[in-house]
Structure formats: structure tokens, C-alpha cells
Length: 408
Image: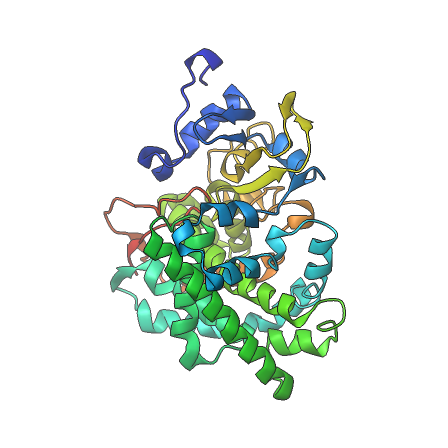
């Protein structure tokens, strides 16, 4: 353990920290679990108890559309770009109560575990078919491209009701929206492409909503429209805006969860053997992946008014980085937190958030990730990592592998 006098702050995008953030985050948490970072010009919350308190604090706002807009170069902010930024204001994740509750309520029934489990057979079938084509036993490949990125795309497109022929454009737009929201867009050209993609994604989904009003199918859009809330408690424009959020968030988070979970299992052969011997432990493997090396490293809040957290005075307007990756390894909450253990089960980890912003898509993400890991563990007894230096996307928010070379 490092003492306060020996602690030296580093940028979270330092390549070494980005590659393996946990030693540094452990030291930061022990130094001070609520720490003002002059490097990031933000408060870094790394303790579990402090983060749980912050996530439930009414003075912390999730409205981050204005800071996003301020980051966009003025030369890019034409009318279409301003329209694109306005669309983000309909995302649940960028809204506070009571707006957040009103928007979320439209999808609550369709995202329940009972509703999602209706798709278990379909997801298993899609998973098996995908792995048969892309991961034949004895072959080699990239588990990120072959499985982790592809499977959620197939499932979410089917669930939303996106025709197979439209999927390539649909997921290209989603990826570019991710560049904007996750901070990967840095150059003028990248911002322009991201904003244009958000508008195209919105307009495509608007057409799909109109089509589903006329020709309902067995999909999410049709089910929500049948509920009667669209045009009543939520406008159609808000509904379409939320669909762009779901399309982006579902694919990205679940892809990272599958890849990180598979990597953790393959790097811990005893845990992999235990999951193979007892398939009931696969759900524990998903939960432990969320805690041990989850798909999201942090979320961002803005102080709407002055508040005090863990003895620190936070001023209105200050940014707060809620560092999930650190809180989920807090030894005050978890025994032996730096050990990957599939026997922990569903602990009180913060991998899907907490309180009113708990991830609405958690049941579906768990189902898709569990299906992917389950088929790989059961049907690929010789599955192993190939010698490779694992590289990670440079991101403050996401924990995302570039690739994962394996022998199936």
C-alpha cells in the first residue's frame, strides 16, 4: 500500500495506466477515496462506499450534454450538428429526475428479466450458429471480432427490429456515435462524422418507428408502441432519441463484457475449469467479470450545487468522475478484490451502476454474455489464449480490448 506522501498522480489516459489501471487506482483509492485531480480538473471518486453515496446523491447531475457540446469545435457546429447534440438530451443516461423516471418508464416492462428471458432460445441459437461459422474447434481467430463484437450486434438488431440488410449501416452509425459520446473523437473530421452519424441513426429509427406503427412485428419498438405511452407520457421524438441511446449502449457494453469475461476466464485456468465442471457457475463468471474487469471504467457527473462527500467540499459546477473500476476492487467491500473468483456469485458490485441509473439493459446484457461464454466453455474444451500483448482502446470511460487472439 502506498502512503499519501508517496502517491504521485498520473493521467488516466497514460498508456501504462490505460493498459492496466488497477494498481494505480488501488493506490489512488488508498491515498484518498475522494480526490481532487488537477490533471483532470475533476473529483475522482474511487471508494465503494463513497461512490454508492455519490450515485444516490440528488445534487449530482447526469446532464452532460452541455459539456459535450462545449468540446465540439466551433467550426463543426452548424445547424445539423446542433440538431445532433439536441438528440442526446433525450438519452436517459443524460437526464435527472423526474425526467429520467418518465423516460425510463416507457421501457421498464420490456427490459424486465421475465420479458428478456423470452429471447433466451433465440440468443442461444444465434450464439451457436455464429460460433459454428466463426470459431470452429481447432481454428484460430480474434474473439473480439469473431464473437464479442458480432454477437451483441446480431441480437440487438434483431431485438430492435432492424432488418438484417440494414445492419452494416446501422452499426457503423452506432460506432461513430460512440466516438462522440466516449470522447474518442478529437479532430474536426471525426466530430463531423460522429454528429452526422447520430442524425442518420435518428432518422433511420424514425422511419422504422413509422413502419412499425403500420406493420407491428415481434420486436422492442412494436411492443413499446403497443403499450400506448408514446404520444402520451413520452413524445415520439423522445422515444426515437431513447432508441438511439439503447442501440449504442447495448452493443458496446455487452461486447466489452464478453471479451473481458473470456479473457479473465482464460487467464485463470482453475476458474475456467470450475465453470466447465459446473455450468451454474457461468452466471457467477459474468458477475465476476463485471466486478473484476468490467466493460465500463467510470461515469461522469456534474455537481448541480455545493455538497460535501467524504469530508471534501465539492462546488457547484465541478465535474465528478465516478471510477467504477476502482470501487469494484475496494477491499473494504470485497474480500481479496484483486482475485478473479467465479464462486462469488452476484455480489453488490457496481458494474451496472446503482440506484436510479442502474443499467436498464442489465438483464439482456447478462443473458447475451452468459450465452456467449457458456457455448465457448462447453463446446471448446481446448480454448486458449494465443501469445499476444493485449491492447486496449484508449478511453476514460470504457474498458475495451482491441482484439483477443485465441485458439478455439
